[in-house]
Length: 349
Image (tube, rainbow, N blue to C red; front, side, top):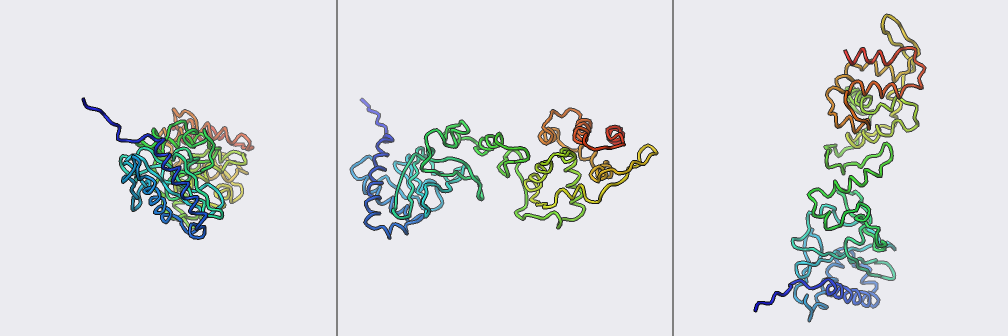
């Protein structure tokens, strides 16, 4: 008779090993407090691995504890199935920035990971938790990374928030999209999810540029795009430039401190239309009429899906939809000219 034996010890056995490891760490750190205060980063990894090896003797984990060298995740593995990620902090709290959401350096075969956290201030303390149980949020440094909180209550992990289990998310082909979708639902008007948008990856330069340092031709091109994509800039809303400001940074890496002046500087002007001269026209309308040819070209060449996203409406006839948006955002202006007819004459013929 062949008896099948499960080669992977139960998680309760691994947690017992971690309990014993934590007990030794606590006792040793009391005896050698100053020494332990200096065990930051990979220095603590070595100590934890040694203690785990000692405590694994006589258990199912004997001779299976490995300290993984290099930039691998997690730091320590056992039975080629369990893992321990070691983090430290010199601050008197239980939070820190964790590992990449993508987990591209995850060791093959490792399915159950625990976070072992050392708070390296007097008195030195240690805690451990299942990895997914202490990940509260996602933050961006040079890549999207989890935020670790060893005091996180049950039910408040990032996985609870997005309603996707950790093991499901980490096995997604594009886990960042799932997180992006969640954060996009939390956005306030004018906000964006920075470069996390994997559906439309950005190729923005690493250099942040100032508007006033850009060539005039580039500024003109961006101004035209702004009038097309953000018709709310023609309104009297106090936040009318918010979305445009975010777009300039997010899509183009451009900061414009004086964004209102781009459209309003220069006072009022005149428009000649149908053999009649209209005076006292706000500068933003003057800029629109002066660029109407380029505006028409931009609308024509824009993707319907992009316009739908920018305008937050169902786009069926782009030129007509844009005209309606402009008229809806200029009702506060005392214009003698029939702006809607003017735009129709210029765009629809």
